[in-house]
Image (cartoon, rainbow over the protein chains, first blue to last red):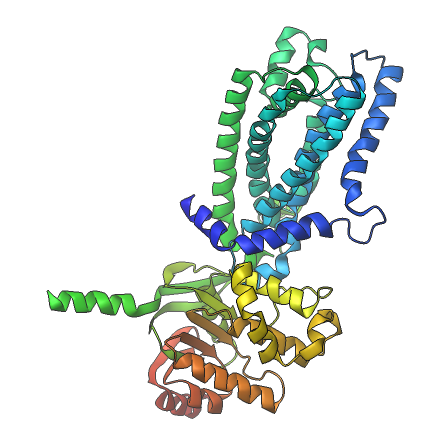
Length: 258
Length: 253
């Protein structure tokens, strides 16, 4: 672990230019450019804002803001997974020819996702202001929750990007699971819809705690629930350590397997 | 007491130490890369094992310039890749001390759409340099490459010679303590080759450790003092360069 911190420091320039490439390169050549990273989730919000209240008859107060505060953090999660999973595979040409700390690749995807998320938070704040919810000092908790989410998703992506080199199916399996997880997280519905028993199960999903913490910050103007944060801290810690050791174990074979 | 200290000093002076290293590659007749193939053909995976290196031991001291020679497929390049940590040994271990740069394939990590200048930054950052360090060297790198105004054109517009000149200039200017070079003394035209040669000579005299894999025996004779002959994955001979080359030519020439 300490070696990783040293490595990251020594190769900070590579990390920096990789993050830049990740943020700028993704939408290079498209008309709206980087704006797509905001437009995409907003279009998704639009779809759900039409589908759920009118067709499914879901009635939630401030439903639009409820959706935005759920979908934007979810986009952060799912984008990092989708891009991070393939990052080792798509950089095969440099992996085969030069040595550098391989973990730089998934880490730069996660960092660029985090930066993108912070920028997207401006969109959330705009919705809060226009929607009449306003902004409160609880926003100070935002970095804490975002960093917990960062380590959670980084752990997942470290493991998946390495496994994906050995088993190509990982990409497709994971896509199915993230789709399932979307509906197992209270993003478009409220958790109180379910009986107590099922709520407990949903609470086990770390994304539930993460998104409800964001909603407390932006929508309800409350301090995030301490027990939720503690649970997140433990889960994110475990996932990160596991993901990192899986990556370290598998990285030695990258150049040969690619 | 003093003897003990001398021993430690000698130990510290070894910058590359290869201990009992063996490397086996798996050769799949049909590589299973999807889960289905792995499950369905679990008993059909014909993996042949091909041992490239067998129990290699090699110590290289600080400031030495060593040539690895041998026929094609003898394992020279694999040994170099192991030293770079691109691949890892099946058995044994390799320790290196200090910053290491490798020139295995020129222009690894060049992005064709970026300009030469941008690629210098990207390439040098792969070698672990910070922006400041690159800023300090960029003038030298551009001058050495002799690319002139082409430096601000995208790399995809370069000729292969220009491409290699840029790559060589970056790698040679990153100030690594150990430089691993695989068969690239044939960079560019006669003039540039001589310049590279002079630069390597300069590095050699400045306490850098250099390991070269090459088939151009005449040039490595001039550059290196020590030769290591790798034959069928083993060190067949290790010693003074002229003697090693003579012996090598007797058997393989």
